[in-house]
Figure (cartoon, rainbow, N blue to C red):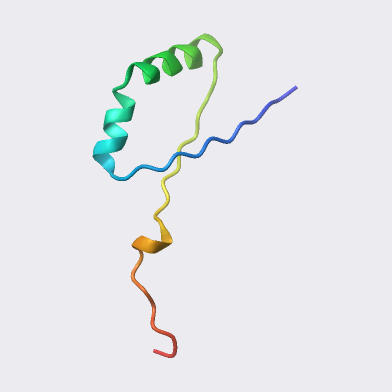
Length: 58
């Protein structure tokens, strides 16, 4: 049986991501990934709000 979980996090900036990765909780998660041979895939997406607005008809 294969179980797939999807976890989505949103961060304000790179400094926030770095602080999260340095937290004790992330060390626990890393230990669990190693113990149970779990794998992650990380993708970075930009918010639509961060993209330049297109003008219609131009």
